[in-house]
Amino acid sequence: MPALGALRDFLAQLPAVQTNDSPFQGIGGGVDGDTWWVKFGIDVDHPLAWRVVQELAHVLNLLSAEERLPTVFKPVSPPPYLNGGPEEFLSWVIECPVDAMEPDAVAKWLEGRLPRPVNDPDQWPLD
Image 1 (tube, one colour):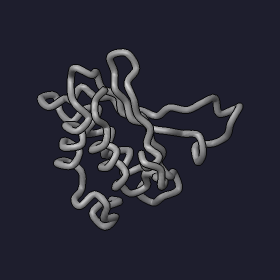
Image 2 (cartoon, rainbow, N blue to C red; image 1 turned 90 degrees about the vertical axis):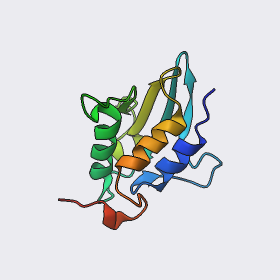
Image 3 (tube, helix red, strand yellow; image 1 turned 120 degrees about the vertical axis):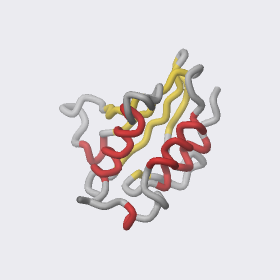
């Protein structure tokens, strides 16, 4: 199984990403068949929530025609009519084929392309 620690640690630093005191900081992960994945929550009420989503979607889904990563970043949810709204039940997943790219390499790509330092909200302009 690919090591997810570096990617989890990186994601936990992003503004609006929900974490906890568990060993994995509230960020799930694993391998399903030939795909590794990480799953996490974003506080949709955080002022930078949608900026973080936009930045992750840009880098992970379509950085450019010449620099496409083999990753997919997408929302996932159980049926809203059975559970509730996005504040509690909307999660985000990064997926990647196991043989295409390691999670630590994805963390390095994000680190090199997202605002720096990523844990400083002032570096994430809203306009």
